[in-house]
Length: 248
Image (cartoon, rainbow, N blue to C red; front, side, top):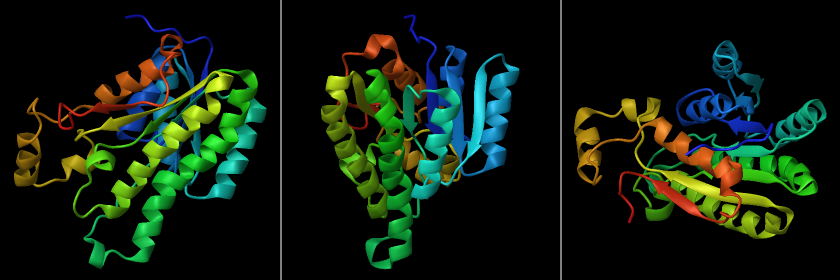
């Protein structure tokens, strides 16, 4: 199926690697001008450079998404430069796993701020221009553990579950202005994080996935790209699990 993007500008957080990188590359391949955001200038710079070398349009921007003031300034600067940001992909996230009784308050706050509060800041500052122009796409990358929970990840699961509620609320607030808000919930995807799992852990995970394999970052990118296209204009407030059948 051919997807349509009409001279759109997209901002992708956590674009320096993994899922965010795959999303940025696929959107750029479809003609979208992509702003690649990550905390590391080297990682987002490398992705933007690769996109440009392949004939696409991209800009790298190093921002700590956990810093609300930095996000506000970056948003204002980008809107002044580009005139609009049509697509927002809130993908940046970290993990600081541990059983609840051993979890420090710092680890709790760090994950909540980076994975959830950052989405509040980006959506508030970037979303206003979308509602003014009466067109926009917001896609929040949550997780299946935000739906089903996971021992040792109370902070991460709370943030990802919160993101689902945030997605639905924004969908209701922005719908009358032609702006959609959806969430994509990956299952276990081949990334730097899953690559570090010991073989026995990876085997145990695979055993509970009906398709009997981990997903690829491209699987998430394709769903996200569809939700950003003109053809997805009547879809909002939904959560799409891309998980090989883990959550049914």
